[in-house]
Length: 213
Image (cartoon, rainbow, N blue to C red):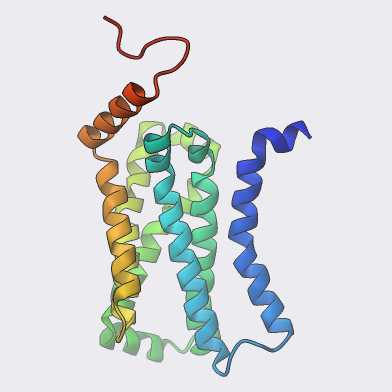
């Protein structure tokens, strides 16, 4: 099918992003969400949200490193699914676990630094999700790109939230921190230019040289 041939990467992005949600629903219907289902749902939705957020941040570096421009086309998909899972993460905590009892939520905000850093990380993602459409991009013009730079702050804050949540084993959040640091480094203009020039020297386009005499 021509559509699948040209859009397989978009379809794959949707499948990968929805697979954890389908798995959670399947486990719920089987009543197989471990002995502590609320904690399981909270941790799983938060983890998947963070993975997809990092994946959205990785799309541009992947395009820079490998010249695969289609990676840019799935960046918004991963970002919106990340926001969906992080919203579910927050709802499970606030509605299912605490039944919107704000005294308990305020207590956690005061006593748990992970909560204190997680809330602003989520709030930074809200305007990004709202203005993710092509219509908002046209309305905001250059301001749209500046607004979406908030992801460079929201992602490290999300990693820090994860780091402070994990009291015992720090290997996984530290791995996320290292990956995000590399992804942000690859976005720096001097690094980006150096990578693009090196890629063109190694794999010049067959039709013309990128560095004319």
